[in-house]
Image (cartoon, rainbow, N blue to C red; front, top):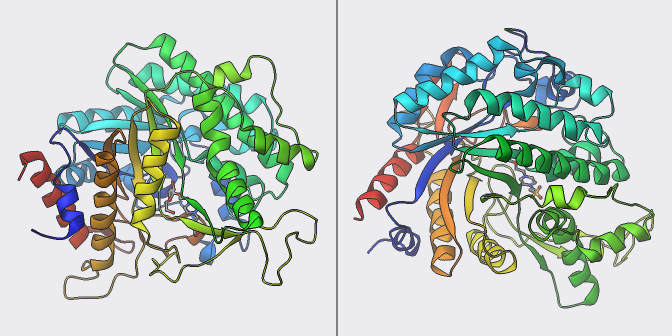
Length: 462
Ligand code: GBH
């Protein structure tokens, strides 16, 4: 029998794809070796007060020097695919000009190492590490950055396309735009809403330009896509202001990306909201056709879902600047160490909704996972029951969505190992493998063993 989640998981087909995911700045270290230049994250980490305890990615998991061992670790987990990102300033220092042969050589060796162990490489071209020089020239709010990104993408594609089938352009453009240029909680730490909206368009344009060029240079078997982070936005009550708050949260969180990518136009309600604030998307003729270049797979990163109210604590529907209120209302559910509520049923809801609103695009869960305060134990912090439960219920939720008609082809656990958790530094641990940062020793946690056994069971149909 087993739990409901376990029963759901057993309905996944033997062909379902299983992986683990990481990103360059979070694990590589070797921040200034072999010609790599600074990214906006190197700069942000050195800005006092931005990152927990002044942590940075100079060493991180030292993966750059331990890559072969780490690939062996991946193999031992029994996954068939490894999702990693390429560091732009490593491959093209400064973000323009010729390729840095040594930097690109690292990914060349990584791909060979993976293939030698029968693990498919899944490349993400941009996981937030913009070369600092491009930020100095204006960053994502300026149009030129989109063209620079497409040039960089081609440098990587030319070298690896003979061995890499799966290509993701961007990881979570919402984070790059909104956390980077509006909330300032991520690099480059700017706080200007119109800049963030310009960044949205140029990120999408960069995705489209890169996708078109890679598609033209590639083979039919290549698959191209983008990864979006999405949750759910539920109105707290049936009131008009709560429903409006949820609509806006979903609009700026999901539809402003999904609609241009998959329907060729920005959502009219959000364009109207922006116009009311005198903000315009910097669209030029032909941009929407480029952005809507066909994709083969939509990457979905899910962590939590939220309930929204359109009123603040005092009952006001407008904030001090006159903008409509959008307040998240905690539901009293258990939370992870990030404070994010654990709501696997929302994951099913999101995936089923995507399959209905944007039919015809296969989905892959490119990230899902959790940080927990791993409790010390005889095995040294590896008895991570909370994380294991999170995986069980969320993979069950994916299977449930599949059974309701969502076309989901695979799942990646975030993350292979504990790593640099952005503004939270090394304080928050998402790994299924523990990293002792003093010794760089890797130890699989209980969740890793559970994941390995689950994959084995699904593959064998037992
Ligand atoms: C991902 O981003 C990243 O791709 C990855 O690099 C990172 O390590 C991982 O997640 C873990 O954080 O404050 O309750 O509203 C996740 C981005 C953005 C997740 C916003 C949750 C809202 C939570 N996220 N978010 S809440």
